Image (tube, rainbow, N blue to C red; front, side):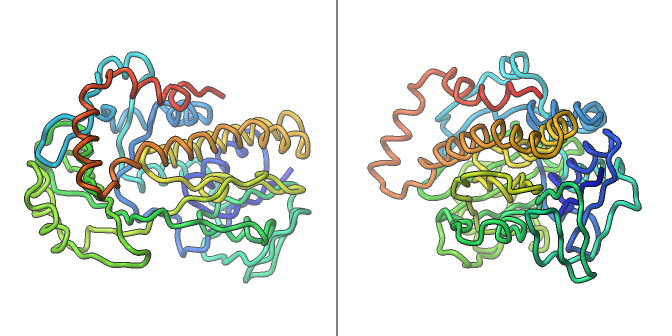
Length: 367
């Protein structure tokens, strides 16, 4: 049995590992010239680690990047809005790991036979019968998996009439600052903008910034420094220590709920199926869950029945996470002064357990 995977990112490579471990012939088609990742930091949460456990890689990732969950949310002045019991979260759900995205891609890629990896292949069309057309010709497989991201060619091929990804109204900058002491993983909320910091095992600090902006707008590092110069420490220091070339900016998109993730002998997963806002940090974790669930279902039940099971299991769950992620970040992007003042007054009064309760469906996943 052969599976062709369109896309060589985290979801695509995890799918390749999962099927290879089950004895399938695997082919991964990646448009880029090499299998790598240009992103910044990534926190793999407990459910993502359990998905990696299912393909034999969880302990290897845990060994390199132990981390803590989000300690909470502060106001731009530094006052606590939400403060989480980090120890309780880890005892209840398991460990967190923070790594560079490229490190996870490298770990997954190394578990795939080199001859299965085909970089520099531009896929042009995918048909429900398992036929893939690309700039080097084409192929037909027992199963095709579209793991080709938010602007998926696979998804557009199968459902050309469905709406594509929508811009959610804010853009995101990601960067890694040089080593410096920080107070754990935190988010800070302002009016229509926020700043996040995540310490990495080597002392560097992964930072992300989100701000309301028109789609396609570009803001450089100097403007970010000016914008956040009066926010609490160490936000100004983190931005001041960073170089322009270390900053990546991407508009933030979300995919409207698809009516199905499968068509014929083809399935979509990860951002190709359920692109979500980064507010819960669940994008990569859900792609990992997709990959191991799909391989288990198809290898156990056969292609058609397995695809039906994959769709039945994964679509409700991932679309729930998409909704919760959207809701989790909404209040950070309010711009009304009365509304943000009310938000900052009410959030500290809420019970701390609300955060853990809202994320329990995500963190407690098992295959």
